[in-house]
Image (cartoon, rainbow, N blue to C red; front, top):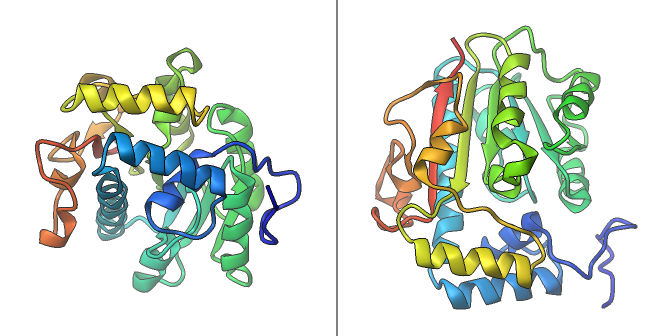
Length: 269
Protein backbone atom coordinates (compact mmCIF):
# COMPACT_ATOMS: atom_id res chain seq x y z
CA UNK A 1 0.00 0.00 0.00
CA UNK A 2 1.45 3.36 -1.07
CA UNK A 3 1.91 5.88 1.75
CA UNK A 4 0.08 9.18 1.09
CA UNK A 5 2.32 12.25 1.13
CA UNK A 6 0.35 13.71 4.05
CA UNK A 7 0.81 10.63 6.29
CA UNK A 8 3.38 11.17 9.07
CA UNK A 9 6.37 8.84 9.04
CA UNK A 10 6.00 5.85 11.34
CA UNK A 11 2.21 5.63 10.97
CA UNK A 12 1.13 2.05 10.29
CA UNK A 13 -1.12 2.22 7.23
CA UNK A 14 -1.86 -1.51 7.28
CA UNK A 15 -4.42 -1.30 10.09
CA UNK A 16 -7.44 0.97 10.51
CA UNK A 17 -7.73 3.49 13.32
CA UNK A 18 -10.94 4.72 14.99
CA UNK A 19 -10.11 8.37 14.20
CA UNK A 20 -9.58 7.69 10.50
CA UNK A 21 -12.62 5.39 10.25
CA UNK A 22 -14.75 8.14 11.80
CA UNK A 23 -13.30 10.59 9.27
CA UNK A 24 -14.30 8.18 6.49
CA UNK A 25 -17.85 7.90 7.86
CA UNK A 26 -18.10 11.70 7.84
CA UNK A 27 -16.92 11.80 4.23
CA UNK A 28 -13.46 13.15 5.06
CA UNK A 29 -10.31 12.65 2.98
CA UNK A 30 -7.65 12.05 5.63
CA UNK A 31 -7.94 8.28 5.87
CA UNK A 32 -6.31 5.27 4.26
CA UNK A 33 -7.82 2.55 2.07
CA UNK A 34 -7.81 0.18 5.05
CA UNK A 35 -9.90 2.69 7.05
CA UNK A 36 -12.40 3.09 4.22
CA UNK A 37 -12.68 -0.67 3.80
CA UNK A 38 -13.39 -1.11 7.52
CA UNK A 39 -15.95 1.71 7.45
CA UNK A 40 -17.64 0.27 4.33
CA UNK A 41 -17.88 -3.18 5.94
CA UNK A 42 -19.45 -1.63 9.04
CA UNK A 43 -21.97 0.22 6.85
CA UNK A 44 -22.92 -3.06 5.15
CA UNK A 45 -23.72 -4.45 8.59
CA UNK A 46 -25.54 -1.31 9.77
CA UNK A 47 -26.52 0.92 6.83
CA UNK A 48 -27.47 3.97 8.91
CA UNK A 49 -24.04 4.16 10.57
CA UNK A 50 -23.08 7.42 8.78
CA UNK A 51 -26.14 9.05 10.38
CA UNK A 52 -24.75 8.11 13.78
CA UNK A 53 -21.48 9.87 12.92
CA UNK A 54 -23.38 13.02 11.92
CA UNK A 55 -25.55 12.80 15.03
CA UNK A 56 -22.47 12.55 17.21
CA UNK A 57 -20.94 15.59 15.51
CA UNK A 58 -24.14 17.57 16.06
CA UNK A 59 -24.15 16.61 19.76
CA UNK A 60 -20.59 17.92 20.06
CA UNK A 61 -21.59 21.29 18.59
CA UNK A 62 -24.56 21.65 20.94
CA UNK A 63 -22.54 20.64 24.01
CA UNK A 64 -19.79 23.15 23.20
CA UNK A 65 -22.28 25.95 22.66
CA UNK A 66 -23.99 25.07 25.94
CA UNK A 67 -20.66 25.31 27.78
CA UNK A 68 -19.86 28.61 26.08
CA UNK A 69 -23.22 30.01 27.19
CA UNK A 70 -22.35 28.86 30.73
CA UNK A 71 -19.14 30.90 30.66
CA UNK A 72 -16.52 28.28 29.81
CA UNK A 73 -13.58 29.78 27.94
CA UNK A 74 -11.12 26.87 27.77
CA UNK A 75 -11.77 23.46 26.26
CA UNK A 76 -9.87 20.19 26.48
CA UNK A 77 -10.98 17.85 23.67
CA UNK A 78 -9.67 14.34 24.38
CA UNK A 79 -9.97 11.86 21.52
CA UNK A 80 -10.55 14.77 19.15
CA UNK A 81 -9.95 12.78 15.95
CA UNK A 82 -9.25 14.04 12.43
CA UNK A 83 -10.03 17.75 11.96
CA UNK A 84 -13.20 18.39 9.98
CA UNK A 85 -15.71 21.17 9.43
CA UNK A 86 -17.14 22.60 12.64
CA UNK A 87 -14.10 21.90 14.81
CA UNK A 88 -14.30 22.90 18.45
CA UNK A 89 -11.95 25.87 18.03
CA UNK A 90 -14.10 27.18 15.15
CA UNK A 91 -17.27 26.98 17.25
CA UNK A 92 -15.52 28.55 20.24
CA UNK A 93 -13.67 31.34 18.45
CA UNK A 94 -16.78 32.42 16.59
CA UNK A 95 -18.09 33.56 19.98
CA UNK A 96 -14.84 34.46 21.74
CA UNK A 97 -11.55 34.63 19.80
CA UNK A 98 -9.62 34.76 23.09
CA UNK A 99 -10.90 31.39 24.35
CA UNK A 100 -8.46 28.46 24.36
CA UNK A 101 -8.78 24.96 22.90
CA UNK A 102 -6.44 22.00 23.22
CA UNK A 103 -6.96 18.88 21.14
CA UNK A 104 -5.63 15.52 22.37
CA UNK A 105 -5.53 12.30 20.36
CA UNK A 106 -3.59 9.05 20.29
CA UNK A 107 -3.55 8.97 16.46
CA UNK A 108 -0.51 10.81 15.01
CA UNK A 109 -2.42 11.51 11.78
CA UNK A 110 -5.11 13.34 13.74
CA UNK A 111 -2.52 15.33 15.68
CA UNK A 112 -0.48 16.20 12.58
CA UNK A 113 -3.51 17.53 10.72
CA UNK A 114 -4.70 19.45 13.76
CA UNK A 115 -1.32 21.15 14.06
CA UNK A 116 -1.34 22.06 10.36
CA UNK A 117 -4.78 23.66 10.66
CA UNK A 118 -3.82 25.47 13.88
CA UNK A 119 -0.44 26.76 12.66
CA UNK A 120 -0.12 30.35 13.85
CA UNK A 121 -3.13 30.12 16.19
CA UNK A 122 -1.81 30.88 19.67
CA UNK A 123 -5.20 30.11 21.25
CA UNK A 124 -5.39 26.49 20.12
CA UNK A 125 -3.05 23.50 19.97
CA UNK A 126 -2.85 19.74 19.61
CA UNK A 127 -0.85 17.05 21.41
CA UNK A 128 -0.49 13.30 21.14
CA UNK A 129 -1.45 11.50 24.35
CA UNK A 130 -3.33 8.43 25.56
CA UNK A 131 -6.45 8.72 27.73
CA UNK A 132 -5.61 5.34 29.24
CA UNK A 133 -2.49 6.97 30.74
CA UNK A 134 -4.35 9.83 32.36
CA UNK A 135 -1.44 10.98 34.54
CA UNK A 136 0.87 11.37 31.55
CA UNK A 137 -1.91 13.00 29.55
CA UNK A 138 -2.57 15.62 32.23
CA UNK A 139 1.14 16.34 32.57
CA UNK A 140 1.39 16.90 28.81
CA UNK A 141 -1.65 19.20 28.91
CA UNK A 142 -0.07 21.32 31.65
CA UNK A 143 3.16 21.61 29.65
CA UNK A 144 1.34 23.35 26.80
CA UNK A 145 0.28 26.25 29.02
CA UNK A 146 -3.02 26.47 27.14
CA UNK A 147 -5.21 25.00 29.88
CA UNK A 148 -5.33 26.54 33.37
CA UNK A 149 -6.64 23.90 35.74
CA UNK A 150 -7.31 26.56 38.38
CA UNK A 151 -10.15 27.85 36.18
CA UNK A 152 -13.22 25.94 34.93
CA UNK A 153 -12.59 23.74 31.90
CA UNK A 154 -14.89 22.24 29.30
CA UNK A 155 -13.88 18.58 29.03
CA UNK A 156 -14.94 16.82 25.85
CA UNK A 157 -14.86 13.01 25.68
CA UNK A 158 -16.69 12.52 22.42
CA UNK A 159 -16.83 8.96 21.05
CA UNK A 160 -13.66 7.91 22.84
CA UNK A 161 -14.56 6.02 26.02
CA UNK A 162 -16.03 3.09 24.08
CA UNK A 163 -12.42 2.44 23.01
CA UNK A 164 -11.38 1.95 26.64
CA UNK A 165 -11.80 -1.63 27.86
CA UNK A 166 -13.52 -2.36 31.17
CA UNK A 167 -10.25 -3.69 32.59
CA UNK A 168 -8.64 -0.34 31.74
CA UNK A 169 -11.03 1.35 34.18
CA UNK A 170 -12.87 3.98 32.10
CA UNK A 171 -14.68 5.27 35.20
CA UNK A 172 -11.33 5.78 36.90
CA UNK A 173 -9.99 7.67 33.89
CA UNK A 174 -12.92 10.09 33.98
CA UNK A 175 -12.54 10.42 37.74
CA UNK A 176 -8.87 11.41 37.34
CA UNK A 177 -9.93 14.15 34.94
CA UNK A 178 -12.64 15.33 37.35
CA UNK A 179 -10.13 15.58 40.18
CA UNK A 180 -7.81 17.69 38.03
CA UNK A 181 -10.31 20.40 37.07
CA UNK A 182 -11.75 23.29 39.05
CA UNK A 183 -15.33 23.46 40.35
CA UNK A 184 -17.59 24.87 37.67
CA UNK A 185 -16.00 22.69 35.01
CA UNK A 186 -18.21 20.74 32.61
CA UNK A 187 -17.82 17.39 30.92
CA UNK A 188 -19.53 16.11 27.77
CA UNK A 189 -19.47 12.39 26.96
CA UNK A 190 -20.86 10.59 23.94
CA UNK A 191 -20.65 6.82 23.76
CA UNK A 192 -21.79 3.93 21.56
CA UNK A 193 -24.62 2.02 23.20
CA UNK A 194 -26.23 -1.40 23.00
CA UNK A 195 -29.33 -0.12 24.79
CA UNK A 196 -31.74 0.20 21.88
CA UNK A 197 -30.32 -1.99 19.13
CA UNK A 198 -28.44 -4.86 20.80
CA UNK A 199 -28.24 -6.98 17.64
CA UNK A 200 -26.68 -4.18 15.55
CA UNK A 201 -24.35 -3.30 18.42
CA UNK A 202 -23.24 -6.92 18.65
CA UNK A 203 -22.54 -7.12 14.90
CA UNK A 204 -20.46 -3.94 14.96
CA UNK A 205 -18.63 -5.02 18.10
CA UNK A 206 -17.61 -8.33 16.53
CA UNK A 207 -16.58 -6.60 13.29
CA UNK A 208 -14.47 -4.08 15.19
CA UNK A 209 -12.41 -6.90 16.70
CA UNK A 210 -12.27 -9.40 13.86
CA UNK A 211 -11.75 -7.03 10.95
CA UNK A 212 -10.86 -3.55 12.17
CA UNK A 213 -8.73 -4.87 15.06
CA UNK A 214 -9.98 -1.92 17.14
CA UNK A 215 -12.18 -3.35 19.86
CA UNK A 216 -15.21 -1.12 20.36
CA UNK A 217 -17.23 -1.59 23.54
CA UNK A 218 -20.93 -0.86 23.26
CA UNK A 219 -22.30 -0.15 26.74
CA UNK A 220 -25.76 0.00 28.27
CA UNK A 221 -27.31 3.26 29.41
CA UNK A 222 -26.58 2.41 33.05
CA UNK A 223 -22.92 1.79 32.21
CA UNK A 224 -22.70 5.13 30.40
CA UNK A 225 -24.39 6.92 33.29
CA UNK A 226 -21.77 5.39 35.60
CA UNK A 227 -19.04 7.21 33.67
CA UNK A 228 -20.43 10.48 35.09
CA UNK A 229 -19.84 9.35 38.68
CA UNK A 230 -19.07 12.36 40.88
CA UNK A 231 -20.48 14.87 38.37
CA UNK A 232 -23.89 16.58 38.56
CA UNK A 233 -25.93 15.88 35.43
CA UNK A 234 -27.37 18.66 33.30
CA UNK A 235 -30.91 18.07 32.06
CA UNK A 236 -31.99 15.94 30.28
CA UNK A 237 -29.23 13.65 31.59
CA UNK A 238 -27.87 10.78 29.52
CA UNK A 239 -30.10 10.33 26.50
CA UNK A 240 -29.96 9.31 22.86
CA UNK A 241 -27.71 11.72 20.95
CA UNK A 242 -30.47 13.38 18.90
CA UNK A 243 -32.51 13.98 22.08
CA UNK A 244 -29.86 15.99 23.96
CA UNK A 245 -31.19 19.55 23.66
CA UNK A 246 -31.90 19.49 19.90
CA UNK A 247 -31.90 22.95 18.38
CA UNK A 248 -33.65 22.22 15.08
CA UNK A 249 -34.80 19.42 12.80
CA UNK A 250 -31.32 19.48 11.26
CA UNK A 251 -30.08 17.94 14.51
CA UNK A 252 -32.24 14.89 13.88
CA UNK A 253 -29.78 12.86 11.84
CA UNK A 254 -31.07 9.75 13.60
CA UNK A 255 -34.62 8.77 14.38
CA UNK A 256 -35.22 8.87 18.16
CA UNK A 257 -35.63 5.37 19.52
CA UNK A 258 -32.99 3.93 17.17
CA UNK A 259 -29.76 5.75 18.02
CA UNK A 260 -26.63 3.71 18.56
CA UNK A 261 -25.18 6.56 20.60
CA UNK A 262 -25.97 8.21 23.92
CA UNK A 263 -24.55 11.30 25.50
CA UNK A 264 -24.82 13.82 28.26
CA UNK A 265 -23.26 16.85 29.92
CA UNK A 266 -22.51 17.33 33.60
CA UNK A 267 -20.87 19.86 35.91
CA UNK A 268 -18.40 19.63 38.77
CA UNK A 269 -19.78 21.55 41.74
